[in-house]
Length: 433
Image (tube, rainbow, N blue to C red; front, side):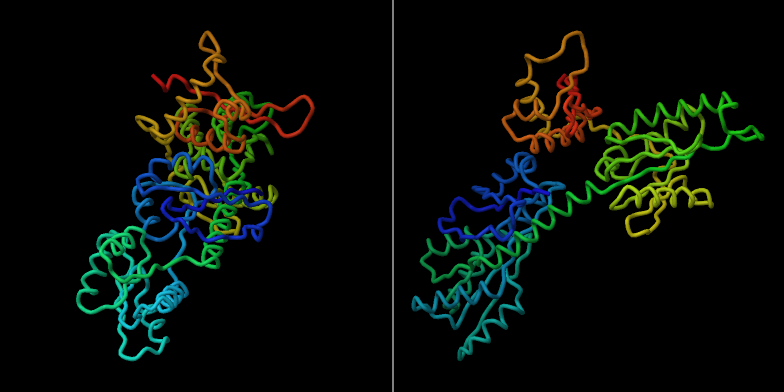
């Protein structure tokens, strides 16, 4: 399973650490992402989300600042500030003739920094630490260092580009906490694990077992009960319409039992992350019946179906709601929101980042727009060529457009010569106004 992990690096960093990426294997693509400042990262976030499976920030400050401005599902981590980095900074400073007895340090755990400085065995030495706090800015750390240098500190050690520049401009003795290859490798390894975990979770098999209530009054369920068969056909129509949005495959196990196979990602799309169940609402509103639903997760279709049927049995045994989820580990959870769920409300306007991509896509495909109001359906190859991206990136873009209500997934188209089916999406151009 191939993943792409980005490593953020400031354009002002002229001596980036060299990393041998061969240890991560051929299935992992690691790419540098240059940035100017936090605003630059925020502005380019939709681009980064479209092309990356995970992102590594150069430190906790930028990570905390950007994540405070953006709510995103993109897995992110950062390169931590370690004791080894402090040792290296002090050794470089001492080798250049700096006095490392009275030191100020920022963005580190105070206890670890004090212990590390004490192990150097310096006589009459002190160390002051201003720990990392997401509410502080680099200016706060600069002020901390300059005030202590004025009171007798002999060296300032910083982890921030802005603070380093300010201290140099002030002519202050300083050293920089620089990341080491081992620390970066560990952060990248964590990002790869996050990316793979995200992929595996989305591709985990999910099954919904859906039961129709009995006809009642002693009337048998079966072909002789024509009203029940009409009800069953109506339920089938509703399930087909609702589950296709998540790429689900609908099958039957009996006259009263339907089974839907899909991925965890597809299940999250049609249920808004297990918050709503539009097919339950529609059956109640249009057919005046309450469905019983068992949701099962698993690493195989057989395990997921077994869990879904266990959930359905739990409903039959008197669960307080009409739906029970059984996850991969066998844990059971009642989905209260399914009982009277409405479809998730559509936002008044899609996110601007998705709207901008959608405008570019529609403009690039303008000549191929169908006439007479017919549905405009495109496959991933067409989207990739229109936006000059890979099909994998096009798939991610289309999923994002679908989540924003700008496109609908439609049944995949199988090719004449076999192979993987071509995934397709209907573009909702009316959303452009």
